[in-house]
Length: 419
Image 1 (cartoon, one colour):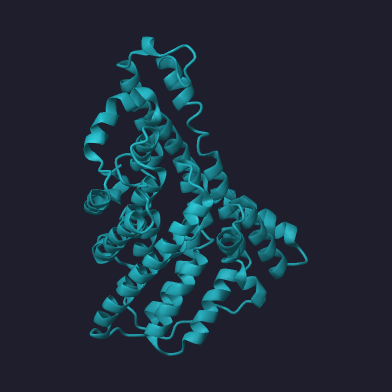
Image 2 (cartoon, one colour):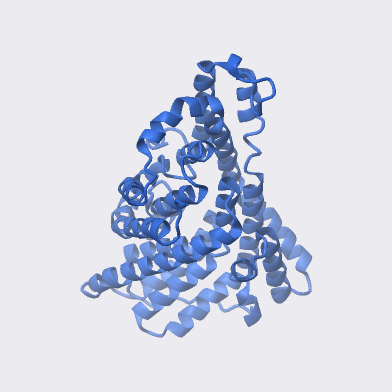
């Protein structure tokens, strides 16, 4: 995965089968009680636990992603996202930095509900020309959009549902962590905005009048659609899928009351099409989790992890802070890559509380979300703005790494993640 010779879509299930085959081959199956839960022999381990039950392990997370993708299509197809951006451009005035600040906030608001490369392409195609046309450098504009995507993504119910389902964390517990992480990412985005913005003042960029997004007839009440699901979850503790459904219905009825069925049908078809790559990734993650959490694998790898993974607050924060860049390139701290297996082993062997595992991977995972040159949205944004992904990595990494350190410290010393 790191050398890009094999995509994560294929590497994860291949890793799961290889780990199960090796650990299962050397495991003493004769010592397994007849009434024990789980596989009784190597055949059961490979064919049932990994290849049959593994793909369905993240069924709930897949459903969260599917409903989130449908809502994302509703927000885009009804013109809600475009209208939010056009309103922001209208009210920002002639100050390029006020325009940049308002656009960053609006992109973050959109990504509390929208997901996927299609959403990045649609919103980026609207936002980036406006910012560059106002005189902002392309690198600064793209980096701010990456921070905004990550900031909004922290509150996105589909992403939260993945952690809730995988690590069996109570939604109310996850909510308290999300609020703290959202504040920290907001501060991180503000620091980048101010520090890099000061450097922008020292350089002159030619600005050219750019056409604003065409105004659309979207009622004001419809503009609540992107934030309605997350508000229902955080304030009223509503389950994730019902919150998504309410958001879809609200968005469709407030924008297209006369033909809501056609709009919702088209959004459903396109939304399900959009999650095909993510669906494949979740299948591989489920297989990796089942392979890593099984007794044969724990018997081999648990002693090594127990010797390395710290369990005291100071050591925990220091270890994962220093190791945070291992989340890049689908590495061992990337929950959507090799880290799925590591997290599964930590969870299965009960080496750390599930809140500590979530804190470690959620905090360090933001490096991958913002800075990783192999992200499809990083690649598209870089190509669209003619900026190298390596430049985006170098400019964003120090700030996101700082967020990771702050989030880890907050998790263990103020949220009691290790308790």
